[in-house]
Image (cartoon, helix red, strand yellow):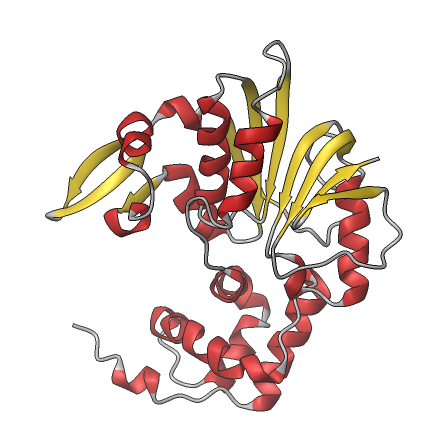
Length: 273
């Protein structure tokens, strides 16, 4: 067994943290203020173990060297992975369920984008909501983290992840699995067949997603960007939304005082005009 105590004694110093923070903001638009130094340190301990490097000073040198190209991607994965859950911010799914999909035409294929999908719970929650109304739909789900996308594609979640999901939804859309005497739930192909997961950087100059989307979930993503990057990302994302299409952002986010072709329909819900 590996003695990990030698790695956990390492401390991330300000100069090394700032080098990481500058790289993340420049390439991905995500701000890491100095107050996040302990969070970054804690997330990167496992990378010290994986690389058998016992100081952050040496780790940062390695990451930004030609030999550290693969480790750089692993570092970005650790730092940018964010919390999510099934039917997070439930009011948004209730709006789709009771208002948008309830009266939707059955001959139309609804195109949906889950931007910043993390480990997939949001995309699968959207698919479940659409399935309830037996409408036609397709979902693209994107994230910056390759590690998170691997989890999303597998669609295998521990029992605790579905604690607040109704039993009838679990029985219809998931299969119970026993792995190492623990209970997991596997998303059925009934949902998986409608979803494509792939990597996308929202700070990119072009997005490999359709331009005629009906619904975009851009939730709890903007809060990590500077005001300037927020405006750039929003403007770019909205280009992919059809007139009359819906944009959902996080409850803690705002687009107030931005000159965008959007009309507010409810808390964090906007319609393109």
